[in-house]
Image (cartoon, rainbow, N blue to C red):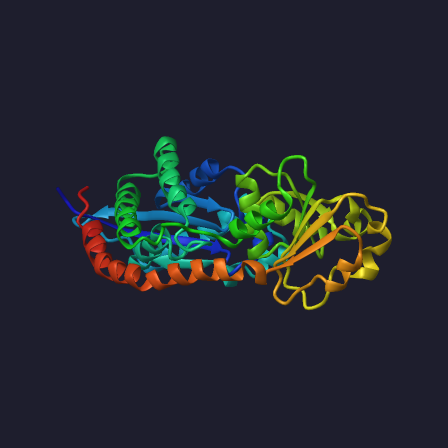
Length: 358
C-alpha cells in the first residue's frame, strides 16, 4: 500500500493564555456539531475537539494524499486552511469584537511533531490544570470516542490519539505522577468540612474567578455542593460559571446579602481588602448562625478585623499551605522523568505516524 502524507494541526486556547472567566467565549455549545463544521472546510479530512473548563483544543488533518499523488500541499494552501479554521471558530462562538481583533495573538497553532508533543504532555498530565490530574486524560479518551461515533475522526487522528492514550497511560503508571493527587480545592474544602461541616443545607459563596477559585469550584462540583460565585464584575462571574460552574452573583449584591452565607471561600488576586469590618458589620451583627470564611488569596483580601464580629471564624491559606505545597512539590519533582520518556517516545511516534498506510 502507498504511504500517506498529511498535515496535522493543533489550534488551541488554554488557561495559560486566556483567563478562565474568558474561556467560555471561545467554547463551543455543541462540540460534535463544531467538529463537523471544521471538517466541512475544503481540504480538512478529520477533526477532534478537546474541550474542558481549562482548554479548547482543535485537532485537524488536512491535505491527505499518497506519496504517488501530485503534491498539492503548497504553503499557501496550508495558510488558507488555518485562516478558515480561525474563521469557522469565530463564527461558531460568541466572541466580542475585541476578542476577534486579537484572535491571532490569543490562539496557539502547532503543526507536525509539535502536535504530537502537546498531546503527550497533555495526556501524561504535565500540562494539565492540576499536574497529573485524571480528568484531562479521560477527556482525551472521551473526545476520541465521540469523534469516532460522529465520524469526524479518521485513520490518522484515531491512530494518533490511540497511541497517545496508550503511551500516556504507561507514563502515568510508571512515574506515579497521577498517584495521590491533592489539589488546592481538595485541601481547602476538606479543611472547611472539618471545621464547619459542608452539606447541601449550607449556603456557600465563592469569591474569585481565577485558577485557585476554579480548583475550589471543581471540588465543590465533585461533591455536588451548590454555590454562588462572585467577582469584580458580573460578566466575570457569569463567564466563570459558564465554564466551571456556580450561580453568578453581582459583588455589590453580595455586600448586602453577606449574612445569608454559612461558608465563604475567597480566592482573588486583588491587592486590597475586599471584605472589611466596616463593610459587613451592620449585616453580621444580627446574624444568629456562624459564618466560616477561608481566605485563599495571596496576598490576603479579608481583613482580620472582621473576627471581632460575633460568629465569624476566619481561616487563611497558610493553614493548608503545607499539605498542598508538599503535594505540588512531589508531583513537580516527577515532571523531569515524564519529560525524559516523552523525549524518547516522540520520535518513535512521529515515525509511526509517517508509516500509516493508505
